[in-house]
Length: 424
Image (tube, rainbow, N blue to C red; front, side):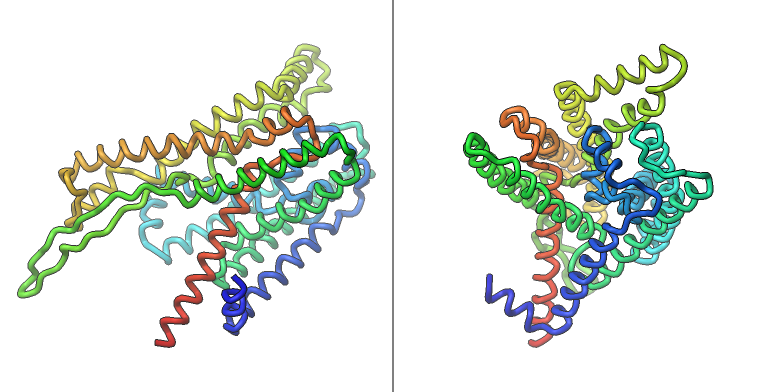
């Protein structure tokens, strides 16, 4: 490992790229602690610690909501816009054609995604501010309409600033910039968790710490195993005569990843799980008694760990099948193979190949869906058995961290390999 690090450091442009990314991450963590004026940060932190829903939003924002910083929305609006356009590409023919045009089409879609991020960030910031205003924590100091608009514009500009920094990181070809920013936010919360654990530690928690360490190691190994796991389908290309030359006759393979959907199903599930109690927060103090009662009932239902965990598990499991069926279409894969003269040994090209790929994908997808759903509810299970509120294994966070690390290492490895070929 040390030899590899020395090799990376010896390549000047790769070294500069890595140092640039580190400098960007330092800048991001700096602006994450720049609060917006006119906010009682202490009152906000107390409110977040007492509200499970807002606390979950704070975790996924990397703690920026807790500080009410200028980047409190993070890259969430951009991710939402990306998912929207990815789904639209499956139902809108014009966007689907752009996706097939390669780099030029992708650039146009990226531009539309950035444009859609602005109204989404404004809408999300307005909803968050209104939700905090409904509380009795006196978080805002004399919030006028002008100040409300100013805060919305500020946090929207903060989100676009992070998107710009993420694109700068992506240009260095050492990983996906947006993913690296999310990775940095997750890692940044680790010292706070350790500090809270040390301050509240006593000898009776020794076994809990040991159990937590064992489960954490097993979880990381499982995430790596599933993330890298794939089913290999052999592909054979028929020989073709073109003039006096013969083409084809080569053997290759089609990899089907176990976790093909990534963390997208978890993001979908989180959005649906958080939406009902988030809306109910606005109607808790409604003047109509039955509306207030229904709103409080919704909040109580979703605060129940058993109901929340079961619903979360089912949604992640279902969305995994839904999203994978969108991004991987056996009929199109079989059609492309047939056009290129490829076939699966022992399977007829065309419809039978599509049916075969569908059967294999469903079996592999079942393992991936169970894995994602288990990872999603893992913190609730660990908290139930250990009784610790400070030591929580964020399965989703681990999945993101491991995926980003693997992707970044692969990018760096490819950069090294490319330069070794250039020397030959």
